[in-house]
Length: 506
Image 1 (tube, rainbow, N blue to C red):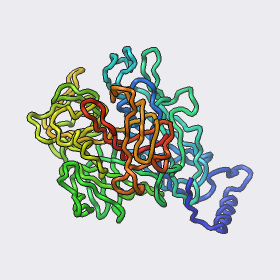
Image 2 (cartoon, rainbow, N blue to C red):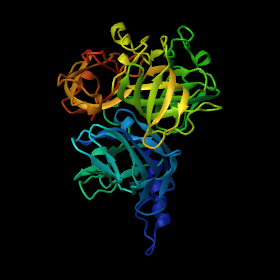
Image 3 (tube, rainbow, N blue to C red):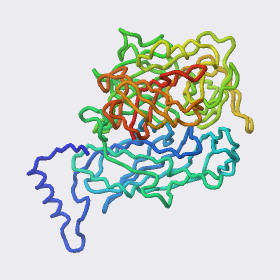
Image 4 (tube, one colour):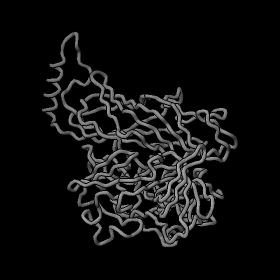
């Protein structure tokens, strides 16, 4: 754990002596949190370890609060707002939950309050599943909300806040330990009797081989929402994930929009690229003081329009496919999708005729033309495959009716970032071979998928970010997670099929 020491040895002794004197006495003996110094503690969240079945597309959960409880003294609690996170996106990415700025020095246990889990899953078990009273047939994708609540304490972890410390805690949610499938019944339990540790583990930031700079705790990636500006600060506000504010620096860089209409070199800078009311994606470095520096900015759309993102789970006709909704932005006025929520199933109809409305969000990665052309500029669902993540702009909306999902007609579709965990088979600095990908991707053979890695200085534009390993050559035959573009051909034989912006070794 990195700790920033702000007191020299002599003042530290003096502070300890004064603290003990103030707490002395036979009846009120001080044992913990005696000093007056405080720490800033930032909190983040990741997820790992999927269950064998069913195949999970989305796992939303509400985080009501995170509490740091000292041996003696007053507990410190932070309440993320809004509190809903999609744990499946955190296989490769990291959520920033906020920072506590006045944590008295001492030892703490950590407890997390959770509720309202909602899971979208493909039933790949071979038989019908019952989930919270809802029947889900084999080979169907179902969305189920559970009533589970829980306040698990992370028994395997004790955190020590230091006087003047600027520190971080990363919570790691074990998906397998929270989800159980017993005798055909799917359930969620945040306080399982076994194993131990249960749903959560934790560690101090930055983690080993995080590939971060001085005074950086973590990298927060692909936070998408509506832009507002104050000086050199950009704030992204999301209906589903709250708000994130980052400061532009001389090291920040700016990517072209997916349609190549905005933020083009040489005018790819803060002044030219960032505008109020845009829909944009940002990456930001979480600093040790709990603030964020802008790493990367990408405009996705120049105006605040209806914008729906989701994971493809079925291709129905040449002009229709289905997604599980994972994110959304509503138009500033007269939104068509006000009744649509993350976790909903949605049927997508393409406008006809379609004229080059298929875009790829490369985020600065140099995707080879042969791979890029599998999606960019296409006009029907031959370019669309289960497991891809896409963003669409609805022009017509029909609300869900009973068991029939909502339907939208769209005029643009942009390929964005799939998150998946697979088993690493072999790896070099430029290529990663994986198998045992999620079954909703529906691979046609057992041949490993090839993931393209982009080499260069960590943190630079167009380079794959690594977490847990220095580069691709250090990946071992364990589970590995990636955030990648999934570009596949009609025969499902593209190699590479994935182009990674992020790889995390578990």
